[in-house]
Image (cartoon, rainbow, N blue to C red; front, top):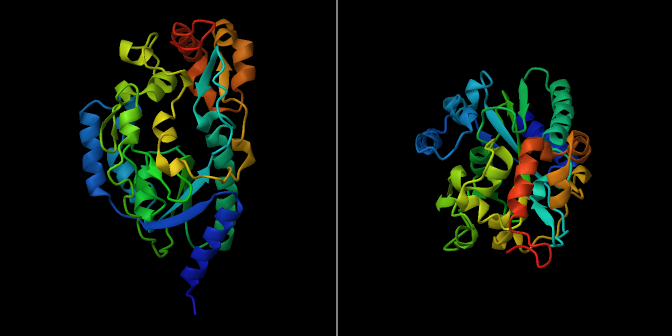
Length: 319
């Protein structure tokens, strides 16, 4: 006969799955000391570029008990954003990373998490819950590894053996002492396709990315007016983000499952370079409203389009 906490775990998992997450697993709340050392080394090496917020509260990122007093369990939820659509590769269009084709995941998943937590707090009033979707200093990928959602690929992203790597991660912390799940093993083997395919050499070691060399960083996060030569010469048609390391991954070649959450199925997969170069504030708002494209700001999208436009000859595509 199952205990109260075992039944509670079953209820929590089934509720999350019913709301659109394709997998939900649990890990014991503890300090990930080895992860903290890796994080500090990565930061000390400057691999986070000018993303200074990543330097704040490194201990909190690796110990959920510093975010929720008496935290016992970390619930990790995975939501797919995969769409079977492919790029047209038409002349004059810039490619958008798959995660940004549809609605802004912060808004979509935060709404779902808020509803889930309301139910959990009503059903289990003696316990506390806190939820995060890329909104707090917590290492979602590390907890995805701990819980068995997947393993960290050589490109540093989490890979799930059934669904590949095209998914978002959300975290729920709770004071409920729920049974943990087992981590998965690393299934990448000797494959180095992601490392070999990165046009700018951003994967500097297995499972380690240098943002200073990453197309995604430069086209989304960087506020710089211009790109360094290594980035500008290797944009590979990318205008917002980059999925090259995921596109070549064998674990993404077998998928048949479309994202369960319809808001993530959108039509922003390619953007017109000329329109972005000429766009004004009104066009920018109409294009980006409710999407992750807002992250790059008007200035950033125009910068990306101008850089990419240098390698578009107007007839044969990208040089």
